[in-house]
Image 1 (cartoon, rainbow, N blue to C red):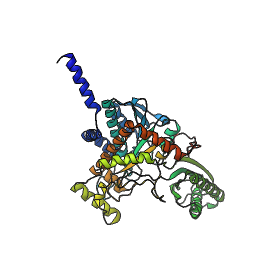
Image 2 (tube, helix red, strand yellow):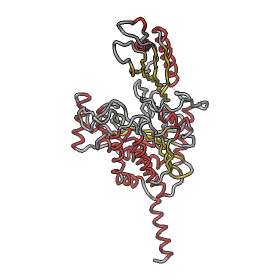
Image 3 (cartoon, rainbow, N blue to C red):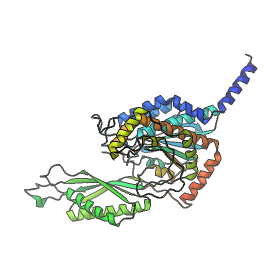
Length: 477
């Protein structure tokens, strides 16, 4: 072969690479599936809770480094947070990844309740799949950028402690999303879909009461019970429930209540969440909860201090991006179970309801609904703060048996099986396809930004609900 023939061959080969299609990208994702399945299942096995995801974040960082990403670890003063970058210039597309587990929901990958003795926590929200699936999508987009010579930047944001720790809030506050054009994410669930619903804003914190210890029988008059103060606060907050706006949610647990019945407790602590569709209502109700704590301390002769440990905005939807992602999800399709998976799903459904929902619903892609009715329930996510900073879009994939509630042992069980991995595969392909569209169609980004500015308002100024406190790295202690 002459040099001229070789040059012509190389040029033709480059042209072929430049015509890389989304179906080919999806095939590449399938071909590399095993590596990301292993990472997801290892993170599931580790079940590390918020801000303690040392091994989980290391797995993801090592994988992305091996794929040519530049990794900046320990960002926003959070040891387990990181940003992995490939490419240069605009547009900058962010893909979010989570990897924290929930305490108290240890479970084996079996369809009956069976805690794992080696761990107390479990991935009851599927963040092991979230982190690994997003990494797989980021790598697929990187390969597409390289093959096609497309200019731009893909960034994977490793975001710890979503469950109450507000990890992304600190990353937003540190300016890590300031130059991002669009952020893309997903979440495990019991069905597929693109949600245009918002979420609940949330503020959380710990109330710590200090009293005076004394013999509960021999000298009770000398004691001042911190547990009495916690109970008095709880009673007042529970009475307050009648007098808060609809859709407000208040949850609490008593994390410390004393050591022995015959000792007047000198210290007690409660852990509170306040949620609402509006962050402004969250602020108002939280102030009333603080006043209840002050009143409880005054009435019991104790002292109280509190620490805000988390706070997140509600999600700001984006219809332009939602429609783009829905088109890709429809092209990818849902999750189809084999006979063994179907039997597993039936048993899970029976454990939740006594009657199994149809496992076949995991294969359904519902129609896109631009303006769904506001629902009173729902959860909270620190993706909300990202969505008020940059146009953001997300999806759910069926990683759990249909009908499985989040934060349950059933969700942990499903997430440790091939059912969870199949849903992760759907999410990775959908996100990769959506991001390829964003790189290929600048008008989509422009339209999404215009909608974002209109929804957010011209006078919007971001203020974190958790204030200027440093990351609450010990909030799980």
